[in-house]
Length: 355
Length: 252
Ligand SMILES: Nc1ncnc2c1ncn2[C@@H]1O[C@H](COP(=O)(O)OP(=O)(O)OP(=O)(O)O)[C@@H](O)[C@H]1O
Ligand SMILES: [Mg+2]
Image 1 (cartoon, each protein chain N blue to C red):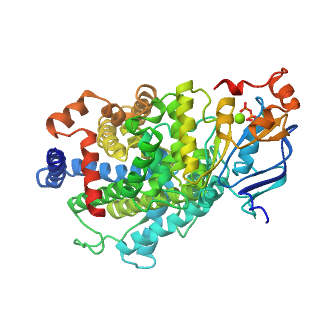
Image 2 (cartoon, rainbow over the protein chains, first blue to last red):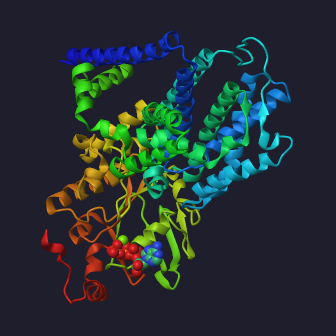
Image 3 (tube, helix red, strand yellow):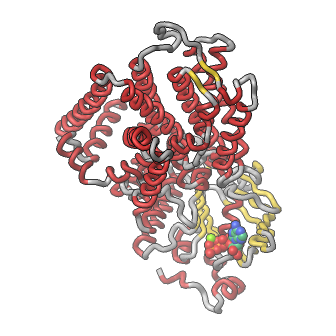
Protein backbone atom coordinates (compact mmCIF):
# COMPACT_ATOMS: atom_id res chain seq x y z
CA UNK A 1 0.00 0.00 0.00
CA UNK A 2 2.69 2.43 1.01
CA UNK A 3 4.75 1.45 -2.00
CA UNK A 4 1.91 2.70 -4.16
CA UNK A 5 1.89 6.11 -2.47
CA UNK A 6 5.62 6.51 -2.72
CA UNK A 7 5.55 5.60 -6.40
CA UNK A 8 2.68 7.97 -7.17
CA UNK A 9 4.30 10.84 -5.34
CA UNK A 10 7.60 10.19 -7.06
CA UNK A 11 5.92 10.09 -10.44
CA UNK A 12 4.17 13.37 -9.75
CA UNK A 13 7.42 15.04 -8.77
CA UNK A 14 9.00 13.68 -11.93
CA UNK A 15 6.17 15.06 -14.08
CA UNK A 16 6.35 18.40 -12.34
CA UNK A 17 10.10 18.64 -12.76
CA UNK A 18 9.70 17.73 -16.41
CA UNK A 19 7.01 20.36 -17.00
CA UNK A 20 9.07 23.05 -15.27
CA UNK A 21 12.15 21.91 -17.21
CA UNK A 22 10.30 22.36 -20.49
CA UNK A 23 9.21 25.88 -19.54
CA UNK A 24 12.73 26.73 -18.44
CA UNK A 25 14.14 25.33 -21.68
CA UNK A 26 11.74 27.42 -23.76
CA UNK A 27 12.93 30.58 -22.05
CA UNK A 28 16.55 29.57 -22.47
CA UNK A 29 16.05 28.90 -26.17
CA UNK A 30 14.06 32.01 -27.03
CA UNK A 31 17.08 34.25 -27.79
CA UNK A 32 18.34 31.66 -30.26
CA UNK A 33 15.23 32.06 -32.36
CA UNK A 34 14.00 35.55 -31.58
CA UNK A 35 16.40 38.04 -33.07
CA UNK A 36 14.27 41.17 -32.91
CA UNK A 37 15.72 43.54 -30.28
CA UNK A 38 12.23 44.94 -29.81
CA UNK A 39 10.84 41.57 -28.71
CA UNK A 40 13.90 40.76 -26.63
CA UNK A 41 13.49 44.10 -24.91
CA UNK A 42 9.94 43.15 -23.97
CA UNK A 43 11.15 39.91 -22.43
CA UNK A 44 13.82 41.75 -20.47
CA UNK A 45 11.17 44.19 -19.32
CA UNK A 46 8.99 41.26 -18.21
CA UNK A 47 11.90 39.80 -16.23
CA UNK A 48 12.85 42.86 -14.28
CA UNK A 49 9.35 44.25 -13.79
CA UNK A 50 8.14 40.87 -12.52
CA UNK A 51 11.11 40.75 -10.16
CA UNK A 52 10.23 44.21 -8.91
CA UNK A 53 6.65 43.07 -8.50
CA UNK A 54 7.81 40.05 -6.48
CA UNK A 55 9.61 42.49 -4.21
CA UNK A 56 6.39 44.48 -3.86
CA UNK A 57 4.44 41.30 -3.25
CA UNK A 58 6.50 40.36 -0.20
CA UNK A 59 5.01 43.45 1.43
CA UNK A 60 1.71 43.91 -0.37
CA UNK A 61 0.75 40.27 -0.80
CA UNK A 62 2.41 38.38 2.03
CA UNK A 63 2.44 41.03 4.77
CA UNK A 64 -0.60 43.05 3.74
CA UNK A 65 1.33 46.34 3.77
CA UNK A 66 0.56 48.30 0.64
CA UNK A 67 3.63 50.06 -0.61
CA UNK A 68 3.52 52.70 -3.30
CA UNK A 69 7.22 53.41 -3.23
CA UNK A 70 8.88 50.58 -5.05
CA UNK A 71 9.98 52.71 -7.97
CA UNK A 72 11.84 54.81 -5.43
CA UNK A 73 13.75 51.85 -3.93
CA UNK A 74 14.54 50.70 -7.43
CA UNK A 75 15.58 54.20 -8.45
CA UNK A 76 17.69 54.67 -5.34
CA UNK A 77 19.35 51.31 -6.02
CA UNK A 78 20.06 52.39 -9.59
CA UNK A 79 21.50 55.70 -8.44
CA UNK A 80 23.66 54.25 -5.69
CA UNK A 81 25.09 51.63 -7.99
CA UNK A 82 25.72 54.19 -10.78
CA UNK A 83 27.47 56.55 -8.38
CA UNK A 84 29.61 53.73 -7.05
CA UNK A 85 30.56 52.71 -10.57
CA UNK A 86 31.21 56.16 -12.04
CA UNK A 87 32.57 58.06 -9.03
CA UNK A 88 34.17 55.36 -6.90
CA UNK A 89 35.10 53.03 -9.79
CA UNK A 90 33.77 50.02 -8.02
CA UNK A 91 33.08 46.86 -9.97
CA UNK A 92 29.41 46.78 -11.04
CA UNK A 93 28.72 43.39 -9.46
CA UNK A 94 30.07 44.63 -6.17
CA UNK A 95 28.06 47.83 -6.58
CA UNK A 96 24.95 45.65 -6.86
CA UNK A 97 25.61 44.18 -3.42
CA UNK A 98 26.46 47.54 -1.90
CA UNK A 99 23.43 49.32 -3.32
CA UNK A 100 21.20 46.58 -1.88
CA UNK A 101 22.72 47.12 1.55
CA UNK A 102 22.35 50.90 1.34
CA UNK A 103 18.75 50.82 0.14
CA UNK A 104 17.85 48.16 2.73
CA UNK A 105 19.25 50.34 5.51
CA UNK A 106 17.53 53.48 4.25
CA UNK A 107 14.19 51.67 4.01
CA UNK A 108 14.60 50.18 7.49
CA UNK A 109 15.42 53.52 9.10
CA UNK A 110 12.60 55.39 7.32
CA UNK A 111 9.85 52.87 7.83
CA UNK A 112 10.57 51.63 11.33
CA UNK A 113 8.70 54.59 12.88
CA UNK A 114 5.73 54.08 10.52
CA UNK A 115 5.20 50.57 11.81
CA UNK A 116 5.02 51.66 15.41
CA UNK A 117 1.75 53.33 14.43
CA UNK A 118 -0.90 51.05 13.05
CA UNK A 119 -2.89 52.04 10.02
CA UNK A 120 -2.23 53.40 6.55
CA UNK A 121 0.85 55.40 7.56
CA UNK A 122 3.16 53.05 5.78
CA UNK A 123 1.45 53.56 2.41
CA UNK A 124 1.39 57.33 2.85
CA UNK A 125 5.03 57.52 3.85
CA UNK A 126 6.03 55.25 0.96
CA UNK A 127 4.44 57.71 -1.48
CA UNK A 128 6.08 60.68 0.25
CA UNK A 129 9.42 58.89 0.34
CA UNK A 130 9.44 58.39 -3.44
CA UNK A 131 8.53 61.97 -4.21
CA UNK A 132 10.98 63.42 -1.69
CA UNK A 133 13.79 61.30 -3.09
CA UNK A 134 12.98 62.35 -6.64
CA UNK A 135 12.92 66.02 -5.72
CA UNK A 136 16.18 65.64 -3.84
CA UNK A 137 17.91 64.15 -6.87
CA UNK A 138 16.45 66.72 -9.27
CA UNK A 139 17.99 69.42 -7.07
CA UNK A 140 21.32 67.78 -6.45
CA UNK A 141 24.21 68.52 -8.77
CA UNK A 142 26.08 65.55 -7.37
CA UNK A 143 23.36 63.23 -8.65
CA UNK A 144 23.19 64.94 -12.03
CA UNK A 145 19.97 66.87 -11.45
CA UNK A 146 17.04 66.25 -13.80
CA UNK A 147 19.30 65.28 -16.70
CA UNK A 148 20.39 62.10 -14.94
CA UNK A 149 23.63 60.16 -15.14
CA UNK A 150 25.01 57.69 -17.64
CA UNK A 151 27.26 54.70 -17.28
CA UNK A 152 30.44 54.80 -19.36
CA UNK A 153 30.06 53.53 -22.91
CA UNK A 154 33.02 51.51 -24.03
CA UNK A 155 33.59 49.33 -27.00
CA UNK A 156 33.08 45.60 -26.70
CA UNK A 157 31.47 43.31 -24.19
CA UNK A 158 32.56 42.67 -20.66
CA UNK A 159 30.87 40.33 -18.25
CA UNK A 160 32.92 41.74 -15.41
CA UNK A 161 31.62 45.23 -16.18
CA UNK A 162 28.08 44.03 -17.00
CA UNK A 163 28.37 45.80 -20.33
CA UNK A 164 27.11 44.24 -23.53
CA UNK A 165 26.29 45.53 -26.98
CA UNK A 166 23.68 42.86 -27.60
CA UNK A 167 20.49 42.38 -25.63
CA UNK A 168 20.98 38.62 -25.31
CA UNK A 169 23.29 38.66 -22.26
CA UNK A 170 20.90 41.02 -20.50
CA UNK A 171 18.11 38.61 -21.32
CA UNK A 172 19.93 35.80 -19.53
CA UNK A 173 21.08 37.91 -16.60
CA UNK A 174 17.54 39.22 -16.15
CA UNK A 175 16.16 35.70 -16.36
CA UNK A 176 18.59 34.36 -13.77
CA UNK A 177 17.74 37.28 -11.48
CA UNK A 178 14.04 36.47 -11.83
CA UNK A 179 14.56 32.78 -11.02
CA UNK A 180 16.84 33.45 -8.06
CA UNK A 181 14.49 36.01 -6.55
CA UNK A 182 11.57 33.63 -7.10
CA UNK A 183 13.36 30.79 -5.30
CA UNK A 184 14.29 33.17 -2.51
CA UNK A 185 10.67 34.31 -2.08
CA UNK A 186 9.52 30.69 -2.14
CA UNK A 187 12.00 29.92 0.60
CA UNK A 188 10.75 32.85 2.68
CA UNK A 189 7.16 31.72 2.24
CA UNK A 190 7.83 28.36 3.91
CA UNK A 191 10.07 29.78 6.61
CA UNK A 192 9.34 31.23 10.02
CA UNK A 193 9.44 34.70 8.50
CA UNK A 194 6.86 33.76 5.86
CA UNK A 195 4.45 32.45 8.49
CA UNK A 196 5.04 35.54 10.61
CA UNK A 197 4.28 37.85 7.70
CA UNK A 198 1.11 36.02 6.70
CA UNK A 199 -0.07 35.88 10.30
CA UNK A 200 0.47 39.64 10.56
CA UNK A 201 -1.47 40.12 7.33
CA UNK A 202 -4.41 38.15 8.68
CA UNK A 203 -4.50 39.63 12.18
CA UNK A 204 -1.89 41.56 14.10
CA UNK A 205 -3.39 40.77 17.50
CA UNK A 206 -3.41 37.07 16.73
CA UNK A 207 0.20 37.40 15.59
CA UNK A 208 1.28 39.04 18.84
CA UNK A 209 -0.63 36.42 20.84
CA UNK A 210 1.51 33.60 19.45
CA UNK A 211 4.74 35.49 20.00
CA UNK A 212 5.33 37.40 16.77
CA UNK A 213 6.64 40.94 17.20
CA UNK A 214 4.70 42.63 14.38
CA UNK A 215 6.98 45.67 14.17
CA UNK A 216 10.12 43.61 13.90
CA UNK A 217 8.77 41.42 11.12
CA UNK A 218 7.28 44.29 9.17
CA UNK A 219 10.62 46.08 9.24
CA UNK A 220 12.32 42.88 8.08
CA UNK A 221 9.85 42.62 5.20
CA UNK A 222 10.34 46.20 4.08
CA UNK A 223 14.13 45.87 4.23
CA UNK A 224 14.20 42.65 2.20
CA UNK A 225 11.68 44.01 -0.27
CA UNK A 226 13.63 47.25 -0.77
CA UNK A 227 16.85 45.28 -1.23
CA UNK A 228 15.35 43.23 -4.03
CA UNK A 229 13.99 46.40 -5.62
CA UNK A 230 17.49 47.88 -5.43
CA UNK A 231 18.84 44.83 -7.23
CA UNK A 232 16.34 45.47 -9.99
CA UNK A 233 17.53 49.09 -10.06
CA UNK A 234 21.09 47.91 -10.56
CA UNK A 235 19.98 45.66 -13.40
CA UNK A 236 17.99 48.45 -15.00
CA UNK A 237 20.92 50.86 -14.85
CA UNK A 238 23.32 48.31 -16.31
CA UNK A 239 20.88 47.55 -19.07
CA UNK A 240 19.82 51.02 -20.14
CA UNK A 241 23.22 52.58 -19.27
CA UNK A 242 21.46 55.78 -18.34
CA UNK A 243 19.18 56.79 -15.47
CA UNK A 244 17.25 59.91 -14.57
CA UNK A 245 14.84 60.90 -11.79
CA UNK A 246 11.83 59.98 -13.94
CA UNK A 247 12.59 56.46 -12.82
CA UNK A 248 11.01 57.27 -9.47
CA UNK A 249 7.72 58.83 -10.53
CA UNK A 250 4.62 57.57 -8.79
CA UNK A 251 3.25 55.89 -11.92
CA UNK A 252 6.26 53.56 -11.95
CA UNK A 253 5.50 52.44 -8.42
CA UNK A 254 1.98 51.62 -9.52
CA UNK A 255 3.36 49.63 -12.41
CA UNK A 256 5.20 47.45 -9.94
CA UNK A 257 1.94 46.64 -8.15
CA UNK A 258 -0.02 45.52 -11.19
CA UNK A 259 1.64 42.23 -12.09
CA UNK A 260 1.21 41.00 -8.51
CA UNK A 261 -2.40 42.08 -8.17
CA UNK A 262 -3.45 40.83 -11.60
CA UNK A 263 -1.58 37.56 -11.19
CA UNK A 264 -2.73 36.97 -7.60
CA UNK A 265 -1.05 38.72 -4.69
CA UNK A 266 -1.58 35.80 -2.32
CA UNK A 267 0.80 33.65 -4.35
CA UNK A 268 4.53 33.96 -4.80
CA UNK A 269 3.92 33.08 -8.45
CA UNK A 270 1.35 35.88 -8.85
CA UNK A 271 3.80 38.54 -10.10
CA UNK A 272 5.23 36.08 -12.63
CA UNK A 273 1.86 35.24 -14.14
CA UNK A 274 0.67 38.84 -14.02
CA UNK A 275 3.93 40.18 -15.42
CA UNK A 276 3.96 37.76 -18.31
CA UNK A 277 0.51 38.96 -19.35
CA UNK A 278 0.38 42.62 -18.39
CA UNK A 279 3.78 43.86 -19.49
CA UNK A 280 3.69 42.65 -23.10
CA UNK A 281 0.12 43.93 -23.29
CA UNK A 282 1.13 47.34 -22.04
CA UNK A 283 4.09 47.50 -24.41
CA UNK A 284 1.96 46.43 -27.32
CA UNK A 285 -0.59 49.13 -26.56
CA UNK A 286 2.07 51.73 -26.10
CA UNK A 287 3.70 50.88 -29.43
CA UNK A 288 0.45 50.67 -31.31
CA UNK A 289 -1.56 53.57 -29.95
CA UNK A 290 0.71 55.98 -28.13
CA UNK A 291 1.15 58.08 -31.30
CA UNK A 292 -2.61 58.43 -31.67
CA UNK A 293 -3.69 58.48 -28.06
CA UNK A 294 -0.83 59.08 -25.64
CA UNK A 295 -1.32 57.37 -22.29
CA UNK A 296 -3.72 54.78 -23.67
CA UNK A 297 -1.63 52.00 -22.16
CA UNK A 298 -1.87 53.54 -18.71
CA UNK A 299 -5.60 53.92 -19.16
CA UNK A 300 -6.01 50.28 -20.10
CA UNK A 301 -3.71 49.32 -17.25
CA UNK A 302 -6.01 51.14 -14.88
CA UNK A 303 -9.07 49.46 -16.35
CA UNK A 304 -7.44 46.05 -16.04
CA UNK A 305 -6.61 46.75 -12.41
CA UNK A 306 -10.14 47.90 -11.61
CA UNK A 307 -11.61 44.89 -13.39
CA UNK A 308 -9.45 42.48 -11.43
CA UNK A 309 -10.23 44.12 -8.12
CA UNK A 310 -13.92 44.21 -8.94
CA UNK A 311 -14.42 40.76 -10.45
CA UNK A 312 -11.43 38.63 -9.40
CA UNK A 313 -9.87 40.14 -6.31
CA UNK A 314 -7.72 37.03 -5.90
CA UNK A 315 -6.19 37.51 -9.35
CA UNK A 316 -5.61 35.05 -12.15
CA UNK A 317 -4.06 32.45 -9.85
CA UNK A 318 -6.86 32.85 -7.37
CA UNK A 319 -9.24 31.89 -10.13
CA UNK A 320 -6.96 29.11 -11.40
CA UNK A 321 -6.62 27.45 -8.00
CA UNK A 322 -10.32 26.67 -7.84
CA UNK A 323 -10.85 26.06 -11.53
CA UNK A 324 -11.42 23.02 -13.71
CA UNK A 325 -8.28 23.94 -15.61
CA UNK A 326 -6.16 23.26 -12.55
CA UNK A 327 -8.03 20.06 -11.94
CA UNK A 328 -7.28 19.00 -15.49
CA UNK A 329 -3.60 19.97 -15.30
CA UNK A 330 -3.16 18.22 -11.96
CA UNK A 331 -4.96 14.98 -12.64
CA UNK A 332 -4.45 14.46 -16.37
CA UNK A 333 -1.11 16.07 -17.13
CA UNK A 334 0.84 15.92 -13.87
CA UNK A 335 -0.99 12.94 -12.33
CA UNK A 336 -1.03 14.53 -8.90
CA UNK A 337 -2.02 12.06 -6.16
CA UNK A 338 -4.38 13.11 -3.35
CA UNK A 339 -2.83 15.22 -0.63
CA UNK A 340 -3.17 12.41 1.93
CA UNK A 341 -0.69 10.37 -0.07
CA UNK A 342 1.89 13.11 0.19
CA UNK A 343 1.35 13.21 3.93
CA UNK A 344 1.67 9.45 4.22
CA UNK A 345 4.99 9.58 2.38
CA UNK A 346 6.16 12.52 4.45
CA UNK A 347 5.25 10.71 7.66
CA UNK A 348 6.98 7.56 6.50
CA UNK A 349 10.13 9.54 5.79
CA UNK A 350 10.28 11.36 9.10
CA UNK A 351 9.53 8.09 10.90
CA UNK A 352 12.46 6.43 9.19
CA UNK A 353 14.72 9.32 10.10
CA UNK A 354 13.93 8.97 13.79
CA UNK A 355 14.41 5.23 13.78
CA UNK B 1 5.21 25.86 55.58
CA UNK B 2 4.86 28.82 53.30
CA UNK B 3 2.43 28.49 50.46
CA UNK B 4 3.83 28.15 46.97
CA UNK B 5 4.08 31.39 44.96
CA UNK B 6 1.00 31.66 42.78
CA UNK B 7 1.66 31.46 39.05
CA UNK B 8 -0.19 34.74 38.57
CA UNK B 9 -0.81 37.39 41.16
CA UNK B 10 -2.96 40.38 40.25
CA UNK B 11 -2.70 43.38 42.59
CA UNK B 12 -5.31 46.12 42.56
CA UNK B 13 -5.70 46.45 38.80
CA UNK B 14 -7.95 49.12 37.36
CA UNK B 15 -8.73 49.82 33.73
CA UNK B 16 -10.33 53.02 32.53
CA UNK B 17 -11.38 53.55 28.93
CA UNK B 18 -11.78 57.31 28.65
CA UNK B 19 -14.72 57.92 30.99
CA UNK B 20 -15.65 54.29 31.61
CA UNK B 21 -14.07 52.28 34.40
CA UNK B 22 -14.25 48.73 33.06
CA UNK B 23 -12.29 47.11 35.89
CA UNK B 24 -11.99 48.59 39.35
CA UNK B 25 -9.32 47.62 41.90
CA UNK B 26 -9.37 43.87 41.29
CA UNK B 27 -6.93 41.53 43.03
CA UNK B 28 -6.65 37.74 42.92
CA UNK B 29 -4.21 34.90 42.42
CA UNK B 30 -4.09 31.90 40.13
CA UNK B 31 -2.83 28.67 41.64
CA UNK B 32 -0.23 26.78 39.65
CA UNK B 33 -1.47 23.50 38.22
CA UNK B 34 -5.16 24.21 38.75
CA UNK B 35 -8.12 25.45 36.76
CA UNK B 36 -9.37 28.85 37.85
CA UNK B 37 -12.56 30.32 36.45
CA UNK B 38 -13.93 33.82 36.13
CA UNK B 39 -17.63 34.50 35.79
CA UNK B 40 -19.85 37.53 35.71
CA UNK B 41 -22.66 39.07 33.68
CA UNK B 42 -22.09 40.63 30.24
CA UNK B 43 -19.90 43.71 30.40
CA UNK B 44 -18.64 42.86 33.89
CA UNK B 45 -15.04 43.43 32.83
CA UNK B 46 -13.91 39.81 32.48
CA UNK B 47 -12.30 40.14 29.08
CA UNK B 48 -10.74 43.43 30.09
CA UNK B 49 -9.12 41.79 33.12
CA UNK B 50 -7.96 38.91 30.97
CA UNK B 51 -6.52 41.27 28.33
CA UNK B 52 -4.55 43.16 30.95
CA UNK B 53 -3.02 39.99 32.34
CA UNK B 54 -2.13 38.87 28.79
CA UNK B 55 -0.40 42.11 27.87
CA UNK B 56 -2.95 43.14 25.26
CA UNK B 57 -3.14 46.48 27.02
CA UNK B 58 -1.61 47.60 30.34
CA UNK B 59 -3.73 48.33 33.40
CA UNK B 60 -4.33 51.99 34.23
CA UNK B 61 -3.35 51.18 37.82
CA UNK B 62 -2.09 48.12 39.64
CA UNK B 63 0.45 45.39 39.06
CA UNK B 64 0.57 41.87 37.67
CA UNK B 65 3.12 39.25 38.68
CA UNK B 66 4.03 35.98 36.98
CA UNK B 67 5.82 33.58 39.36
CA UNK B 68 6.83 36.60 41.41
CA UNK B 69 8.15 38.56 38.44
CA UNK B 70 6.49 41.88 37.56
CA UNK B 71 5.00 41.53 34.05
CA UNK B 72 2.67 44.53 34.20
CA UNK B 73 4.24 46.21 31.19
CA UNK B 74 5.20 43.17 29.12
CA UNK B 75 4.15 43.32 25.47
CA UNK B 76 1.63 40.80 24.13
CA UNK B 77 4.22 39.20 21.86
CA UNK B 78 6.55 38.42 24.77
CA UNK B 79 4.10 36.06 26.46
CA UNK B 80 4.62 32.84 24.55
CA UNK B 81 8.30 33.04 25.43
CA UNK B 82 7.21 33.01 29.09
CA UNK B 83 5.13 29.91 28.27
CA UNK B 84 1.83 31.75 28.51
CA UNK B 85 -0.75 31.48 25.74
CA UNK B 86 -4.25 32.86 25.23
CA UNK B 87 -7.33 32.61 23.05
CA UNK B 88 -9.63 35.43 21.98
CA UNK B 89 -13.31 35.65 22.82
CA UNK B 90 -13.94 37.01 19.33
CA UNK B 91 -12.08 34.36 17.38
CA UNK B 92 -9.15 35.51 15.32
CA UNK B 93 -8.46 32.70 12.88
CA UNK B 94 -5.95 33.42 10.12
CA UNK B 95 -8.82 33.44 7.67
CA UNK B 96 -7.08 32.85 4.38
CA UNK B 97 -4.82 30.10 5.65
CA UNK B 98 -5.74 26.46 6.03
CA UNK B 99 -6.30 25.01 9.49
CA UNK B 100 -2.95 23.26 9.23
CA UNK B 101 -1.13 26.47 8.28
CA UNK B 102 -2.82 28.27 11.16
CA UNK B 103 -1.30 25.82 13.59
CA UNK B 104 2.06 25.57 11.79
CA UNK B 105 2.42 29.34 12.23
CA UNK B 106 2.06 28.95 16.00
CA UNK B 107 4.56 26.09 16.09
CA UNK B 108 7.20 28.44 14.70
CA UNK B 109 7.02 30.76 17.73
CA UNK B 110 7.23 30.80 21.48
CA UNK B 111 9.75 29.28 23.85
CA UNK B 112 9.92 25.94 22.04
CA UNK B 113 9.75 27.26 18.47
CA UNK B 114 10.14 24.66 15.73
CA UNK B 115 13.42 24.96 13.90
CA UNK B 116 12.23 24.07 10.43
CA UNK B 117 9.16 23.48 8.35
CA UNK B 118 9.20 19.71 8.83
CA UNK B 119 9.28 19.96 12.60
CA UNK B 120 6.59 22.65 12.60
CA UNK B 121 4.30 20.53 10.42
CA UNK B 122 4.84 17.40 12.47
CA UNK B 123 4.01 19.18 15.67
CA UNK B 124 1.02 20.87 14.10
CA UNK B 125 -0.32 17.48 13.01
CA UNK B 126 -0.09 16.19 16.59
CA UNK B 127 -1.97 19.22 17.92
CA UNK B 128 -4.63 18.80 15.24
CA UNK B 129 -5.14 15.17 16.25
CA UNK B 130 -5.36 16.16 19.89
CA UNK B 131 -7.91 18.91 19.34
CA UNK B 132 -9.99 16.92 16.86
CA UNK B 133 -9.31 19.14 13.88
CA UNK B 134 -7.19 16.68 11.93
CA UNK B 135 -9.88 15.82 9.39
CA UNK B 136 -10.33 19.50 8.59
CA UNK B 137 -6.66 20.34 8.27
CA UNK B 138 -6.89 21.43 4.63
CA UNK B 139 -10.01 23.58 5.05
CA UNK B 140 -9.58 27.36 5.00
CA UNK B 141 -10.22 28.52 8.53
CA UNK B 142 -12.72 31.15 7.38
CA UNK B 143 -14.89 28.37 5.94
CA UNK B 144 -15.42 26.65 9.31
CA UNK B 145 -18.25 27.13 11.78
CA UNK B 146 -17.97 28.56 15.28
CA UNK B 147 -17.29 25.27 17.12
CA UNK B 148 -14.31 24.46 14.91
CA UNK B 149 -13.00 28.00 15.01
CA UNK B 150 -13.13 27.83 18.83
CA UNK B 151 -11.13 24.62 18.67
CA UNK B 152 -8.68 26.26 16.31
CA UNK B 153 -8.19 29.12 18.79
CA UNK B 154 -7.24 26.52 21.37
CA UNK B 155 -5.05 24.56 18.94
CA UNK B 156 -3.11 27.68 18.01
CA UNK B 157 -2.54 28.53 21.65
CA UNK B 158 -1.46 24.97 22.50
CA UNK B 159 0.99 24.90 19.61
CA UNK B 160 3.17 27.39 21.49
CA UNK B 161 3.55 24.77 24.29
CA UNK B 162 2.24 26.90 27.16
CA UNK B 163 2.44 26.14 30.87
CA UNK B 164 -0.32 28.65 31.54
CA UNK B 165 -3.32 28.89 29.24
CA UNK B 166 -5.95 31.64 29.19
CA UNK B 167 -9.30 30.74 27.59
CA UNK B 168 -11.87 33.48 26.98
CA UNK B 169 -15.32 31.93 26.56
CA UNK B 170 -13.99 29.02 24.60
CA UNK B 171 -17.33 27.20 24.88
CA UNK B 172 -19.71 29.98 23.92
CA UNK B 173 -21.91 28.93 21.04
CA UNK B 174 -21.30 25.21 21.43
CA UNK B 175 -24.12 22.70 21.74
CA UNK B 176 -24.23 20.38 24.81
CA UNK B 177 -22.33 17.57 23.11
CA UNK B 178 -19.61 19.92 21.88
CA UNK B 179 -19.44 21.46 25.34
CA UNK B 180 -18.84 17.99 26.79
CA UNK B 181 -15.99 17.49 24.33
CA UNK B 182 -14.51 20.86 25.20
CA UNK B 183 -14.68 20.10 28.92
CA UNK B 184 -12.92 16.79 28.37
CA UNK B 185 -10.26 18.49 26.28
CA UNK B 186 -9.61 21.16 28.90
CA UNK B 187 -9.32 18.50 31.59
CA UNK B 188 -6.84 16.62 29.49
CA UNK B 189 -4.75 19.75 28.89
CA UNK B 190 -4.76 20.49 32.60
CA UNK B 191 -3.81 16.90 33.41
CA UNK B 192 -0.77 17.29 31.18
CA UNK B 193 0.49 19.96 33.57
CA UNK B 194 -0.92 23.17 32.09
CA UNK B 195 -2.41 25.71 34.49
CA UNK B 196 -5.68 27.07 33.14
CA UNK B 197 -7.55 30.30 33.64
CA UNK B 198 -10.89 30.49 31.91
CA UNK B 199 -13.79 32.85 31.46
CA UNK B 200 -17.06 31.05 30.93
CA UNK B 201 -20.77 31.72 30.90
CA UNK B 202 -21.75 28.07 30.86
CA UNK B 203 -22.18 27.31 34.56
CA UNK B 204 -22.07 23.60 34.10
CA UNK B 205 -18.59 23.86 32.62
CA UNK B 206 -17.39 26.14 35.39
CA UNK B 207 -18.71 23.88 38.12
CA UNK B 208 -17.31 20.73 36.62
CA UNK B 209 -13.88 22.17 35.81
CA UNK B 210 -12.88 24.86 38.28
CA UNK B 211 -11.55 24.61 41.81
CA UNK B 212 -11.52 28.36 42.22
CA UNK B 213 -14.00 30.85 40.83
CA UNK B 214 -13.79 34.63 40.78
CA UNK B 215 -16.94 36.65 40.25
CA UNK B 216 -16.86 40.09 38.65
CA UNK B 217 -19.73 42.54 38.53
CA UNK B 218 -19.57 46.10 37.20
CA UNK B 219 -15.80 45.81 37.10
CA UNK B 220 -15.47 44.79 40.73
CA UNK B 221 -14.68 41.46 42.33
CA UNK B 222 -17.70 40.53 44.37
CA UNK B 223 -16.83 36.98 45.39
CA UNK B 224 -14.29 34.19 45.12
CA UNK B 225 -14.02 30.63 46.33
CA UNK B 226 -15.04 27.17 45.25
CA UNK B 227 -17.92 27.00 42.76
CA UNK B 228 -20.05 25.76 45.59
CA UNK B 229 -19.25 28.68 47.87
CA UNK B 230 -19.59 31.25 45.14
CA UNK B 231 -22.93 30.05 43.99
CA UNK B 232 -24.38 30.01 47.41
CA UNK B 233 -23.22 33.53 48.06
CA UNK B 234 -26.38 35.61 48.44
CA UNK B 235 -24.86 38.67 46.78
CA UNK B 236 -23.75 36.63 43.76
CA UNK B 237 -27.18 35.09 43.52
CA UNK B 238 -28.75 38.48 43.58
CA UNK B 239 -26.57 40.49 41.19
CA UNK B 240 -25.23 37.83 38.93
CA UNK B 241 -28.45 36.00 38.38
CA UNK B 242 -30.76 38.90 38.91
CA UNK B 243 -33.08 36.58 40.79
CA UNK B 244 -33.00 34.91 44.13
CA UNK B 245 -32.31 31.33 43.15
CA UNK B 246 -29.15 29.36 42.64
CA UNK B 247 -27.69 28.91 39.15
CA UNK B 248 -28.63 25.65 37.41
CA UNK B 249 -25.36 24.10 38.35
CA UNK B 250 -26.71 20.85 39.61
CA UNK B 251 -28.51 20.10 36.39
CA UNK B 252 -25.72 17.89 35.05
N1 LIG C 1 -11.34 48.78 24.14
C1 LIG C 1 -12.40 49.28 24.82
N2 LIG C 1 -12.70 50.59 24.75
C2 LIG C 1 -13.74 51.08 25.43
N3 LIG C 1 -14.55 50.37 26.23
C3 LIG C 1 -14.30 49.04 26.33
C4 LIG C 1 -13.21 48.44 25.64
N4 LIG C 1 -13.21 47.11 25.93
C5 LIG C 1 -14.23 46.92 26.76
N5 LIG C 1 -14.89 48.06 27.02
C6 LIG C 1 -16.06 48.21 27.92
O1 LIG C 1 -15.68 47.72 29.17
C7 LIG C 1 -16.75 47.02 29.78
C8 LIG C 1 -16.29 45.62 30.14
O2 LIG C 1 -16.13 44.87 28.94
P1 LIG C 1 -15.57 43.40 28.90
O3 LIG C 1 -15.40 43.05 27.49
O4 LIG C 1 -14.39 43.28 29.77
O5 LIG C 1 -16.77 42.59 29.52
P2 LIG C 1 -16.96 41.01 29.69
O6 LIG C 1 -17.14 40.76 31.13
O7 LIG C 1 -15.88 40.29 29.00
O8 LIG C 1 -18.34 40.80 28.95
P3 LIG C 1 -18.83 39.58 28.02
O9 LIG C 1 -19.35 38.53 28.92
O10 LIG C 1 -19.93 40.20 27.22
O11 LIG C 1 -17.69 39.15 27.20
C9 LIG C 1 -17.91 47.06 28.80
O12 LIG C 1 -18.77 48.09 29.18
C10 LIG C 1 -17.23 47.38 27.49
O13 LIG C 1 -18.11 48.10 26.66
MG1 LIG D 1 -15.73 39.04 27.38
